[in-house]
Image (cartoon, rainbow, N blue to C red; front, side, top):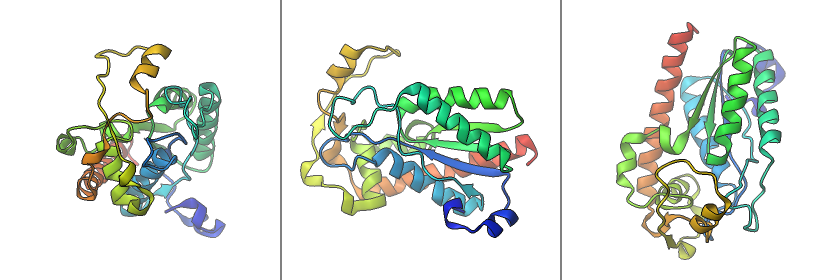
Length: 236
């Protein structure tokens, strides 16, 4: 149930124990994908899962922390502290409105740390429980093997967008840019610039709508299972 679409009286009578919060970014995704790809995908996932779970779906947070590709036109890099404070405030307000389990469906890697910090802070000072999920690596994992060249605007993201909004994808502009990521987590502007010499990693040309549909089905299935397990753990 998307809360932006319901009246106050419907909200009053709704089961507010569980809510899904999609978080994305506005940033360059090659030359073939929309700038809002990272928000569109988690919003779609949350709406599908929310419909089946009959729980609240909060509006997508469109802006995110985009350090790696901030040099490309169309990228809006939001200060990490500002993102942390904003998401924290959303969590506080969700709890004040009756939510006891908030599940964040994150669509952008640069958001993970600020979101997790907010989740730890709010859960330590209230009885709100928060689950933070990076959809592209923590959901639908058994289907990830069908992609041989995933990445930022790569085969997996492009396939997913083809399944959600094929008309917004310009496959004629899809390119390949294979990179080797470090085996450990390293923060380096120079390495980011080398990895993202263009705003794409992987081979977007290998994307198909069918692969995207298969991945989305698996992602929604896993999200529903996690929510149900968390509800059991919390006796909700």
